[in-house]
Image 1 (cartoon, rainbow, N blue to C red):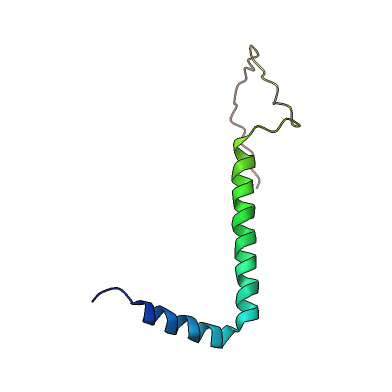
Image 2: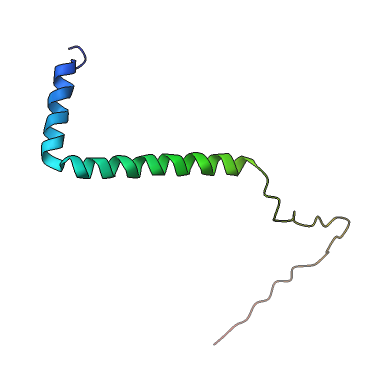
Length: 76
């Protein structure tokens, strides 16, 4: 079994166009293109460090010591 020929794909395209109509297909294509464009912009912005938000302050040299005590309460 080989891959589909161009005629198979044209028939599938014709059936899809008959079912959905060209207007709905055009809208779906525009929505898909917008989603891909938004994804690419998000990836591009995600790689850069935002200049607006300051870095979280680093706390060093402070140690908090404590002791855990077992607290049992008996309710009768």
